[in-house]
Image (cartoon, rainbow, N blue to C red; front, side, top):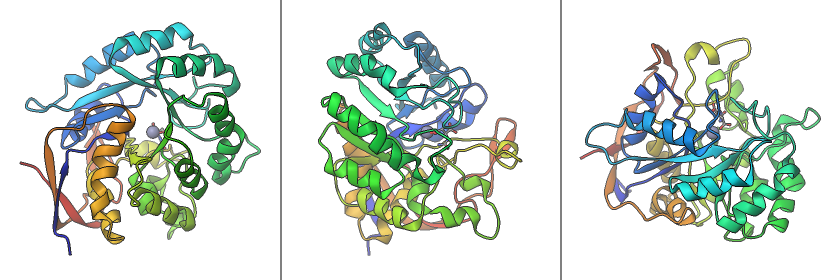
Length: 346
Ligand code: NCD
Ligand code: ZN
């Protein structure tokens, strides 16, 4: 039995830090042991321009703990009005790592998202030319498609076409949730990769309705049936270079989740790496955790690996029931659950 594991310091390739008072919680949580975090741009007013990202980055860094070297990696939000000039400016900035596609209305703060994907073709062409990464929230958002099918339909309806038309555009399919996505990414070329969240590895849709409705497990793309959960566990723990850690940690205050129309998102930064360790350990794949958490993402983004190392130890502890957030509180992922792994900080 493995009782400890030392690995290259990991990165988080998908996180929602929010803004203002939320940064007091989210930034130190992100900086606790990750080297870098890809910061999603879906603020209430989205991060659309290089200047928006510059200012947001400064606000984030004000909350970075003093001795920390953690870095926020910035992303711009694609809209119907994004221009080729925006793409050139993003590339030139040196600190914008990617552009994020949200289908309009598909998820939290996506009202300004793209209404017709085909219209972005000239933008994708420019991104391909300049080698700027496209991150996709891979779901269709039409009323006629069942919520559980939205990712698989997105792949067939849109992603295949985009891959054919822009074969050298680097794409990250974010927070994949289905067997179809895992298989499509695995079989595709080196220009396509995917992030996988802890909630989609730990849970399936039954957990969302176990004994009643569980709003704190409601995230988008929504949890799927257990066969998909199994396929995601297999993909992430396989050692494949195409999958990497992206927590999608997305805090919401308790009242906004426990409501007649609760919003989507799970907060996982209280135990992010520990959750993944739990899953990898269960399938005897701890030896593949370093690739998934610390190597594959950096290689896809063409960034150097982190220099330092961190150690995970087998040391049972209990996830807290709640975490203070924005003057109120939030319920963290797996609240009250016992977990076997803990990151040992120096
Ligand atoms: C995210 C959020 O709350 O910002 N919610 C979620 O369910 N994942 C948005 C997103 O990543 O889709
Ligand atoms: Zn997200």
